[in-house]
Length: 102
Image 1 (cartoon, rainbow, N blue to C red):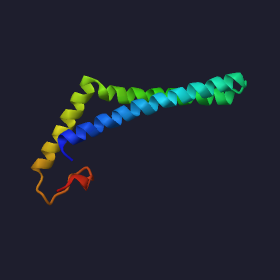
Image 2 (image 1 turned 45 degrees about the horizontal axis):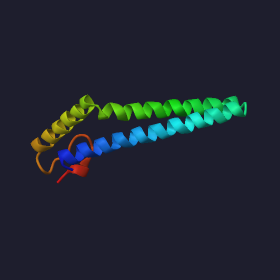
Image 3 (image 1 turned 90 degrees about the horizontal axis):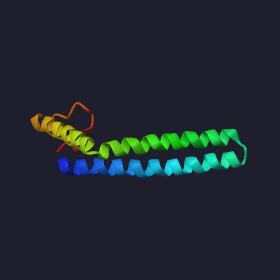
């Protein structure tokens, strides 16, 4: 995968994390509200936990989408591409991910 394609993939994954995280927050808040109405503390606690986990997931995705996050991703991808360029064609990368070999 090219450097640009890899960056777009990372941005897409970050956007997916933000959307999925926000959906989990909404689901968790709804579940907590239902638990409050039903006077079910376990359901309420589970809903709050789900909302918190969703918020963390959305936050992680949002951090990647900041200019700093995108710059870090670009630098990392550039470093990986440089290491791959220095390796002989028949030698796989040390990461164990040989899906990018030519």
